[in-house]
Length: 289
Image (cartoon, rainbow, N blue to C red; front, side, top):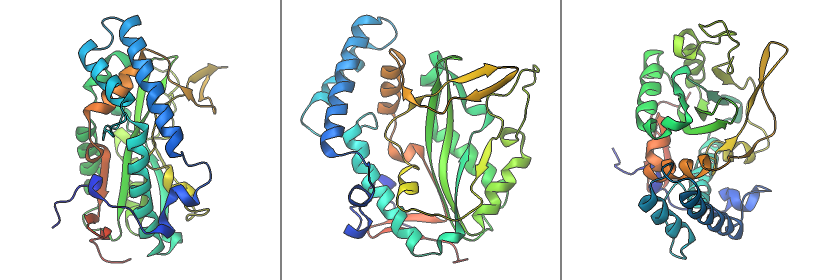
């Protein structure tokens, strides 16, 4: 077995370069400007919100983001752009090797993955991934054909002031049914109401596309995103719904997110079953379905 981590993927072949073929993909210049903005924001947040952000670590990260020297931090838009080009490109290449009608997108929002904003640093993505992997194996991932790949992401709800972690992923072959079977587990079950009787802000915990992939490579770039958005859940007429429009997380929460991202590696937020990383890209380890 290869010991390569997913951050060790090289550049994909030119025909799978998502930055060249996906309209709207962030440019190198835009990512550089975003890092400068993030660094300046961190400096202001350290000054304006004493006690909310560790000053030495905040200034260290700010200096790194504003430096001309590349940083591998997940808090960096430049670093994430590089990861996205490599990872998404190799996933695209992998999908081309199988029939697209045997691949489905999914989003999983476990009930236990919600954290109050002031407890963000307690969120452990590796532990989240391990729990989800165990649940998938408990529903037959070990015996299923095909493969699965997913990445941890999060949104900030500014009204409840919570982070709702989730994964975006692709399932191929028999793994599609494995994802579906999660719905029978309490942590992944759809519920209209919470135990206290209030409306559930996340009704559907497992969302899976019913049709195969179209308009590649755009869906691939959605798996691994370079920022966390703010998206409110609003109560109206006894119901709760997520607003469609995403926004930038406000300070000091945005800088706290950058500090959290800086603590973790790409491997920490990645779940792969039936795949391994090789010098040539992603290789399927289970039988072709």
